[in-house]
Image 1 (tube, one colour):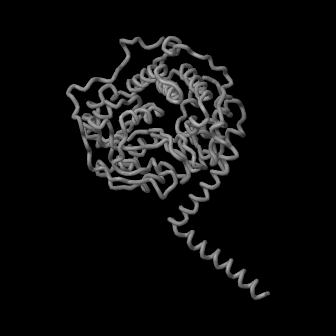
Image 2: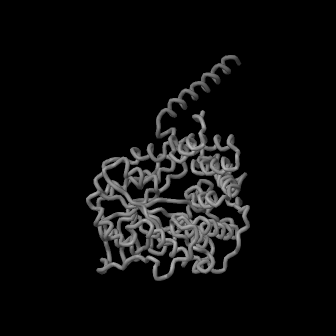
Amino acid sequence: MFKRWKIAVYTILGLIIIISCLMLVPQIRERVTYRFDNLFTRVYYVLYPPEKAVFVPNTPAVTLENPAATLTLQPADTPTATLLPEEDTPTPESTPTPLPDKVVLSGVRYIDQHGLFNYCAPANLAMELSYWGWSGDRTDIGPVIKPYPEDFNVMLYEMADYVNQNTDLSAILRNGGTLELLKTLIAGKFPVLIETGRYMVDVTGKLSWMGHYTVVTAYDDALQEVITQDSYYEPDYALAYADLVEEWRPFNYSFLVAYPPDKEQALFDLLGDYADEEQSNRIAYNNATGEIWSLSGVQQYFAWFNRGTSMVALKDYYGAAESYDQAFLVYESLPESDRPYRMMWYQTGPYFAYYTTGRYHDVIDLANQTFDTARLKILEESYVWRGRAEAALGDMAAAKEDLCASLTYHENFPPALQEIERLGFSDCP
């Protein structure tokens, strides 16, 4: 009996040693960790369904019947202003010569995102840069733009900053893009990195909406589709024009173009009005305003959200707050299966609008609701905004805790460091 017991103990110890050794192999460790994380996520989302979480502003939202007539758009440095007159509204410049019916850019080195947690952003940025001869890989970019490996999201501006600060290339980021502009850039030999949102099967086995980057390298008018280098699916992944627009809409038709500095003028000539960042934000604003009443359901939610995002960019914070209020009203009315509950993982415009207009409790409530949708609370931007609001309300202990938590999940995160310095907090533990 004693001998059997010893055999059992040694067997268990042997298995522990073998498993420990195997876990030292990065590929095996990542796969095991990924599977356990998926299991825990499934259980969490069964207990706390994220699609049930709904943000209700403390400041009652007023249902608007005609946004163009009731909301105002403030120029950047003016406290109050009326809506931009139609004749002064910038619109995308028409292409002086017809575009080719089909253009295919070669030279993008395909890089997938698999094997490392949520490596969509590093993989796609690496592909975008590879077109211009950049020899790095996703693992060169990842530690810089997402130093915490399990970070849910990398913002598009962080990707542009990486290009401008860590490579010999330059990058611009704009909003309000159109299919015609996308084709113009491709025809001009500039691949374009765009941020999209699509319904995909998540770890729980449900179809749910999530953000996704992709690089557009070709278009074909005869087939009515673009060709993308999709880090999740495959190289040369075809996407119908209509699907592209619908998936691009949730992120205000934002796009990033990387380029050698000596090609800047050529790029700006192709961009037309979009060469000026403020003009592009005004184009985005007008586009979102026009889409609000032509769309319904979740697409209308995205249009209202985009309107708020554009107004934040144009510093009309009160108008932005009103637009976001309308977006959240639409969100609450959506069937639970349609709710894009990850939206605030990727965008922070509502925080900016509510905080700037003194709606600090709304900032805190929205951050709490956002955290409720995630099993892992790895959302450094939400910690910063909640910390700012807590400080504004005089709760310095909570503010410091949140700002320090932000640094836990994104080392040296500039917004957190700036806020810590502004508030005079000592170093985080």
